[in-house]
Image (cartoon, rainbow, N blue to C red; front, side, top):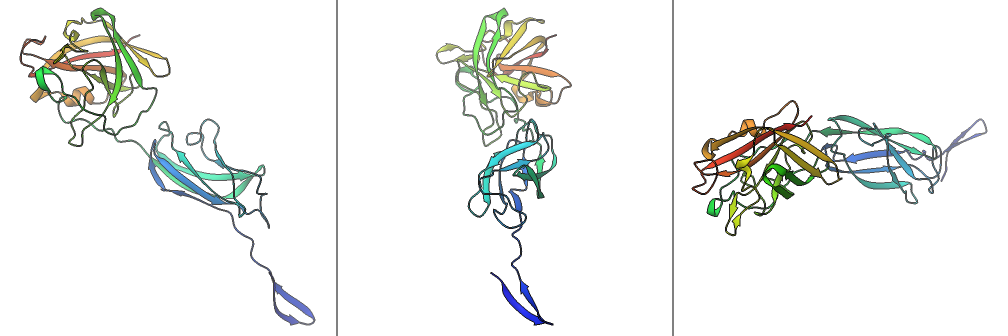
Length: 294
């Protein structure tokens, strides 16, 4: 729509509507790796500049945010040129501030927004896995957490005849670690994936009401025994046992078990009686320490 502003010296002055502007925004503007965001924007379908409605909007940014090449999701626009899409930030994205732009019709659209990505804060359990009835390590359900790589699905320790399914566990609302059913091992999913730098922790029962449980022979391992961890994508990580220790549950070495390491490491944790082997009162924790096998 146009309007007459006035006339001077026979020249008609006419006001024309301002061209619609392209816009882009992201909500929330700060997110933890692995978290969801909603990206909204508008690229006009007419006027100057514009992009035909049947052309999709292609989001662009650093390849760390939109792997592998920096081109992100494609968004179909409505009749006004508006779009809205959901996106999950990869857990592999390094912390930082990332510009997010758009392409349409083969060219860049000259607007952008910014997304601040923050690292996931690793949570550490308070003390040893909780004690359960009959000398077990306790039972519970997973509580929160993120998977940073292919999750472990099986652990094998041939020297003691161990081959068990691995499931993810986390923390209870009170901050204690949960452990799985007696027949399977639990991977603490708020820590590293086995094979990544840092200590991956597997926990399991030593006994249950029905009898021996998944880690009932763990005390029989020897230094140098190999532990194989299979991942959901079919890959395999091997570790070599470097130490076996027993500690009172009241003096569980939380910092040593869960603290940072310079290489991939593995901890296997279960209960132990005063002899360190089982069959009595389970006041202790048995910890098997392993490092990545060469």
